[in-house]
Length: 296
Image 1: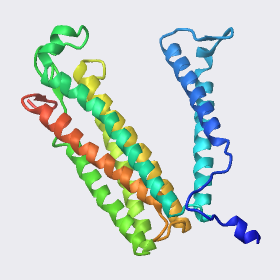
Image 2 (image 1 turned 180 degrees about the horizontal axis):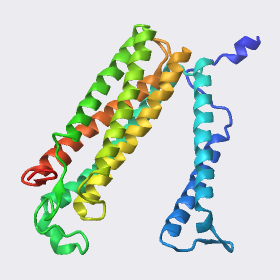
Image 3 (image 1 turned 180 degrees about the vertical axis):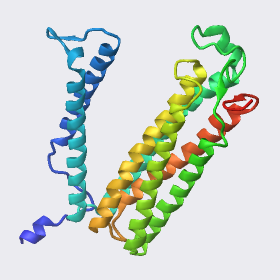
């Protein structure tokens, strides 16, 4: 009788009351307050809050908010994994999880559309930027006068090869779990995580040696915003895959139940595709007729 009551009689999962949504919101709020206090501190300003200058405690506030968010992420996703092992992720629930991931990636696509829009708006109409902008003059050409661009066939091409290889290794890992090949799953994930870390190191090296800065011109601003946010997504995706690797080593995934891995693979392929657009437009197309840094 107890067993009959414990098993769901429908395809939907009625989630138990959870503290994680409100705790996540609280952590995000504390992080935001800490971030504002940090920015006020950097410009030597004050951030009064009930008579207390929070700008002097920006590190502490931001760190507390970050810890709350990280703990919430760990606890919330742990509960999700536990629910899956308990059989709550029925066919309908699994389908809706996939719909949710698809909608999330669609929102990420629109996020990057904004940065591409900013880049192409400035690059295709540099004369209008020259006419109306006060601090982001282009000289009527693109890239702006005086800007030396990065060689697209050096580090950017190297990173393109890295991401394309990582796309094949994560696909290998996905196909391995479908055929219950745990060794292939672990090897594919490990290689993908390694390639993701390598990409981030290469991009950091590129940023340190970039011949232009963020605030030098609208070229630098659009370049660093688009490629920087992509680099941030690579870091998030690498962590996502690292968690999947740890779970794979623990034996969590099965050929029939591995949505966490599947979602990570979708996200990583999205990161790959965005980079291909970045490489072809911001690195290659924008370098036509421009002065390449390090060349005479």
